Image 1 (cartoon, rainbow over the protein chains, first blue to last red):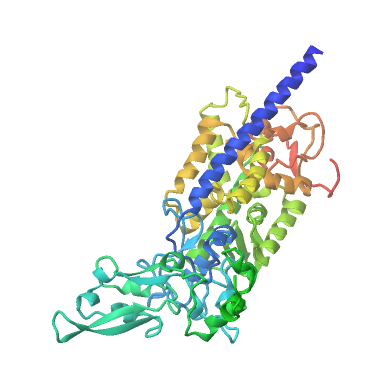
Image 2 (image 1 turned 180 degrees about the horizontal axis):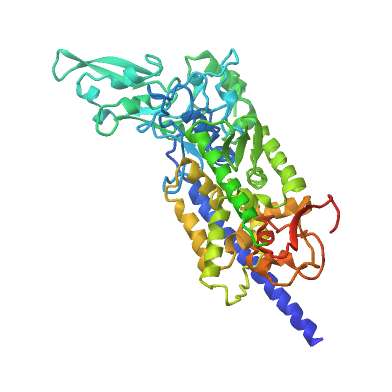
Length: 276
Length: 268
């Protein structure tokens, strides 16, 4: 009797310890993974699904990086292969290990017409569908890898010097990046030729960042979620029919504010003189 | 006859496969592209790692059909044919841990048999399950974030960075820490393949009539608990943890061990 009690006690203790140590290991492991996920300023290949999903769905196989480096257009004149745009994150890169990314100042994305990197992806972390145009063809101009941002104070064009290096480098010249003319009040007789990025067109390829002549590029690509703001649904462009329609079409359960008034459809309270 | 036949076969296979993976990136070859996570054989056939695929799925996101098909192909191959052969014939970490193990024997570090209370050979199965749980909690493939196997493989293909530290750590752990510590106790990928390959047809078979009980096989075996039948019974080594490395066959002077085909689903 005493022996079986002892055995049971031992069994209980071992089980408890195993479970406890597993929980400890799980906590440490989760903690590490959660930190490893937090690599905010990283540019992904074209067609990459949202970062949070990308970190998981990307199976870290490197087929995109291999396709990028070994594409036909990436050869020197003597036939030797150049460094590809896409790098695979390794220890010390401070990005989730094994995921593809690029640094425009080293090698920007050259926006190949056939986009070799995207069809190579087996896990659909690079989503082909997001790059299809109306004719159902792959269209690199639909890529949204990031967004170029100009730091005015370090851009010599904003000083009044003539520089259009980024503008000339842009593959979507006059669409993603335009030059705006402004009078230079300092000299009174010269013009500023100011680079302005248009976020609806810019793909974030980084050719502008690569071309920038300043010591540290005055135009640089940031991930879209860091380089863009968001107005929120409650602002409506009164001059835009479609935006007006958006408010009219809004469903009650999309409304964030909940009070007596929000039980009614917005168009009701705007258009009919309902008293509350 | 003592020989190095299977050892040489294995090293040739391992290094050859790594060279093919390396050449896919360096020279644009289309024989074997990608990494273990997901590969492309001859530019057409998708291959994928079953455990990695499970992690991605348990983190709660859908993955492309190519990966699912690839994982099924790999699973079926090792389930029916190879057993746990991935570990000893493909995985590059195996070369590191084999070197550590060989040095252990040369340096006579194995003299003292140490019993680690919480580091058993079954610990890897706990880690395997834990990896899936952590994946589900954190939302990324948890073992892939730390896996020395793919870190080493990507290191060979794309460059190591500080990732080499992980490989060195495994080497030191196996040399000065626990004997067969990584491959035999911790690695959840090996655990997965142990389960997948449990019933495979290629197996080592023991002939106890010829055995002289010299125990050379048990000394050299990285999973020597699977050799419980030595000098007792003439049966197949059916334990899933056997990596089919063939070292026992190499070191057996009496030819009491050899590869053989076991019928599927047959007990012994």
